[in-house]
Length: 197
Length: 197
Image (tube, rainbow over all chains, first blue to last red; front, side, top):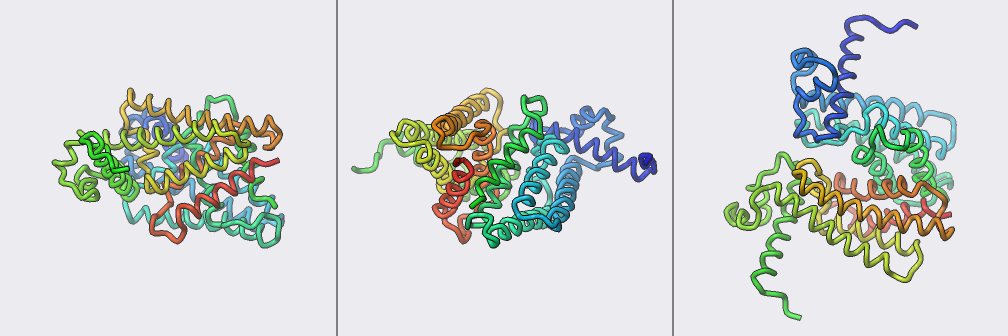
C-alpha cells in the first residue's frame, strides 16, 4: 500500500518527527532546560517551521503523552480481548509498553513529566493513564482468580510493574549495549516470574 | 540519652524539617512550580529564616538527594555485610529503600528530579546512585551464583527493582489507604518472588 500523501497525513508525520526529537531532548537535558529551538534542531527543522505544528513546548509535551497513551491503550484493549491466558496477556502487555517506551519514545522522560501540563489537559492525560493501569490490573486480577498467579495486592503489583517499565526512561540509552528487544525480554521474564504461583 | 542540643545539631534538624517540607511541595506541584516561599510555608518558617539554611531551591533539592542517598548507602553497606543469605539481604534492601522513600521523603519526586542539579554536584549524586545500584546488583549476582536466584541479566533486574521502588514517588499519598509498611511488604514479596529459582 502506498504511503498516505494527503496534507493531513503529512502533518501527523511531521508531528511524530517533532515528538521524537523532543523525546531525545527531554531525556538528555530535562524538560525545563529544553527550548523549542533545541527540538527544532534535533528534528532538522527551523523553529519557524516547528511553530506551524505546535504553539509551544508545552503543546509538544502534551502531544508526546497523549499520542503514546492512545497507542498504549489501543494495544492494551486489543491484548485484553485475546483468547489467551492471563500469563500470555501480561507478557504481551509488558513487552508492548516497554517497546513503546524504548523504541517509539526513545526512553523519553517526556512520557513521565507530569507537572508541566496545565490542569484541564493534565486531567485528560491522568484519565488515560488510569485506564491503562486498570487494564493491567484487570489482567493481574484475572490471573489471581484463575489461580495462575500468586495471591497479591493487585493494585500495588500493577504499580510496581508500571514503575519498573516507566523508569526505563531514566536509564535507557539507544546506543547502549542492549537492544530494546533484549531489555524487554529480560523485564518480561523477571516481572512475570514474580506473579506466578 | 538527651537530644543533641548543640548549634550544629539544631542546624541539621532544621535542614531536615525544610527537606521534608520541600519533599511534600515537590511531590504536589513539581519542582519547577515550587517556590522557596511555598517550602517555607510548609515548614512553618519565614522565607528569611529558610534562606539562613539554604541559598536557593536548587540547594534544597541537592540536600534532599544527597542526604537520602547517604542514608540509603549507609544502610545498604550495613545490610551487605550481614551474615545472612542473599534472599534475606535483598528483602531488607528493598524494604529499607521503600520505607526511606515513603516515610522519610514522603514519596518525594525531589528524590528523582535530576536535571535541576548543576553538573559538578550532579556528578556527585550520580556517583552515589551508581554505588547504590552496584550494592543491589552485587546482592542479586551473589544470589544467582549460589543458585538461590534464577539466572537473569543482573543489571536489568536491578534496574527493574529500582524503578518499581523509585516510581512510588509518583503515586504514594501519605493519606492513602495503605501504610508505608504494608506497601513495602507487598513490594518486597512481589519483587523478590521474581528473583527466585
